[in-house]
Length: 471
Image (cartoon, rainbow, N blue to C red; front, side, top):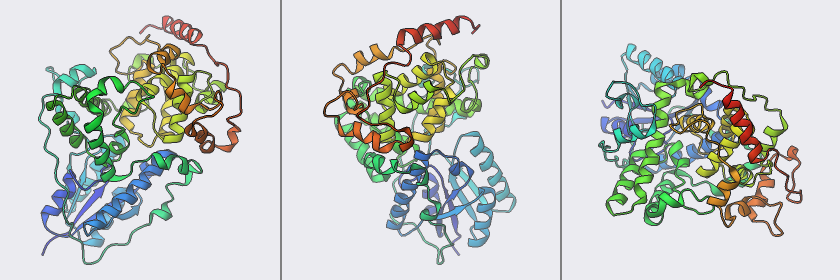
């Protein structure tokens, strides 16, 4: 008799290039895909939790299209998986690897328990192209700087993406399942959900369409347009990559094809994919990057850690009086994403001009981003703050005014996201006031604020603090 296989779904909400699902189908017996709502899911911020719920709904529909379904269970996987094995008679459990320290510990515990019980347990790659333990320096150490990491992997072979199964064998009887409605993963988004929803590109088909459109019309100029926030010049695939609605390998091979066709910007796109890999490389080898200063000598740096300060509130609300910062923060509240140049500017301003701890920003992004990714978020914040893996000197302080003049000369970006200074504000700028909590008591009729900290003043304060430290 064919034996049942459980496929434990995590951040891999796709049918194609899904090694665990493909292996389960190839095994020949019934396949039961299951997603577990555990403490890690409950600990997500409002926006990524809401976006996960949408992704699960879309993936469940895709599974139904190939004759399967998604079983939902709640609890600790250490208990849920063995219970489901006993309930279904499954003889194997497959999943695709995660790399954060809590997930690694959990998965190791689950695998050990299953093998002890005589159940086949196997994990597969899929969320990354290059497993962190396979990329080493000549001395056998891990890479701490991006450029050497890029050079080490750029010519490596990346497996050709797997095709989606045309059908997934179903069991005669499906186990009971929770419902997404009961999980209410959208509860914390409140009224912001209806504002952000039109900007979501949901599911595998949309992700593939987004990749195809980018490769057809944008990638050639990507090395220049990616820095201009008022231009739609990026792939926007971070949203889909974060939940595995598309795989990095699929993006990599598309980028390689574009490069072979002479589209110069494709190399920059490939470097961005590897930047994501580098974030996971660091998280794997130095998990402290998620919660503590990656450079340990920064532990005593006198950052403000009081989120109640008026400056922090103004930063969160997009009311700093610095247009580049405010536009980027409002973009995040309306779309659930933020342009990469904006992320660098708002992070630099918080950690350097306002002298606030990067953890404040990390937690705010964790709550607000639909493309939230644990490794990329942590590395990005520490890179900007100076406490992370940045080959550039820590005393670099972006001037948000000159940055705006350089990358938003015509103020296309600012005028799209800031309403207060315009007679006929952009609809997206007005949408911000419909998305934010009513308790903020903000209106597009308010006067635009004066800077809470002027760029020159903030830069001098930051440099003074650096001079007093021995880095």
